[in-house]
Length: 420
Image 1: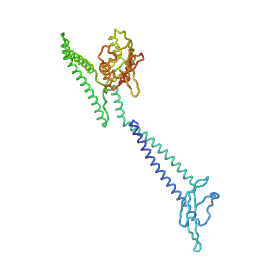
Image 2 (image 1 turned 180 degrees about the vertical axis):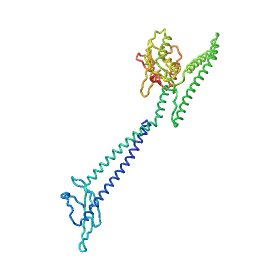
Image 3 (image 1 turned 180 degrees about the horizontal axis):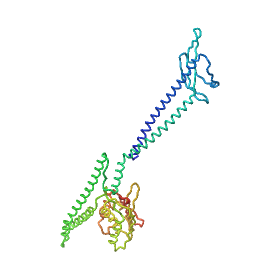
Image 4 (image 1 turned 45 degrees about the vertical axis):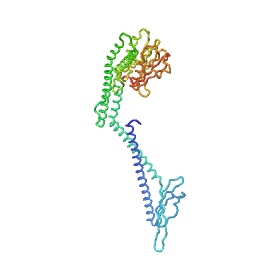
C-alpha cells in the first residue's frame, strides 16, 4: 500500500476495531455477570418464599410434572448449589438446591432440601438482544469515526498531495519549481528542492559554457597548425602524422562544440518540446542536403507529442540518426513518433530506411566512435556515437534492428509526454 493516507486510515481502523472489540467483550461480560446474579437472587428469593410459607400450600405448579428434570444429588444441610440443567427438547434451566434443618418444635426436627429452577430462555433472549444492539451501536460509531478520520486525514494531508502534484508537474516540465504557501513542516523540503533545481540548472549552464569556451579556444591554434601543415612543399612522415592528428583534434573540437550547444541531459523543470515542428524542420533540412538523391522522407507524429528535454539535444540526436538513415537508404526514410504508457509516459521514435541495414555482428559496435557499417561512404563514424551519448544523458534507450523495408530501424526511447 503506497498511499500514506490509506496507511494511516487502515492503521486507525485496525486500532478502532481492537478497541471496540475489547469494549464489546467487556460490556458483554458485565451484562452476562449481572444477568447470572439476577437469576441467582431470584432463585434465592423463591427459596425463602417457600420456606416462609411454613407448610401452607400457596400455589401448585404442574410445569415439572413428567419433565424428568433431575436436580442432582441431595445437598447437605447448609449447602447451596447453583447449576445449569440441560433438558431434551426444552429450554435449559438454572437451578438452586439448598439444604435446611427445620425444627418445628423440640421433639420434631427434619432435614429438607428446597430446589427451584427457572428457564434460561428469557435471559438468553435478552442477552441476544443486548448483543445485537451493542454491535449495531458500536458498528455505527466505528463507521462514523472512520468517515470523520478520513475527512480529517484528507484535510491534514492535502499539502502532501499538493507537493506530489507539483513535483509531477516539475518533472513533466509544466512548472519550473515548487510553489509557496506550504505548512511550516514542509517549507524546508520545498526550499531545498527549489534550491536543488536552481543549482542543477546553473551547473549544467556552467558545464555547457565551459565546454564551449574550451572548444572554441582550441579552434584558432588548430586552424593555424592545419594551415602550416597544409603549406606547399615536401612533407615528411612526421608532418603527415601531425596532419592526421590535427585533423582528429579538429573533429573532436567540432564534436564538443555541438555537445556544448545542448544542455547535457534532462533536468527537472524543463519546458516540453513539441516534436512535430522539430521533425518537420529536420525533414526540410535533410531534403535539401540530399536533394540529388531523390529522397522521400515520411513523418508520422501527432501535434501533442512532446520531448522532455532540451531542443538542442533533440535536434542533435534526431539529426544524427536521420542523417545516417538518409545517407545509407535507397530512396525512403520513415520517421514515427508517439507517446507510450508501458510503465510511465515516455517518447518512442523509430527511424526506418530501405537501405542495406546493419549486419547483426556490427549492431553492438555500431555506436562506438569511428565504427561505420560501410567504410566506402564518407564520414567519420561519430554520428551514432554522439546519439548514444545524448540518449544516455537522458537515461533512455537506443536500439538497432531490421526495418519492414529490409533496411535499418533505429528505435529511440526518451522522456516525453503529451501536451495538455
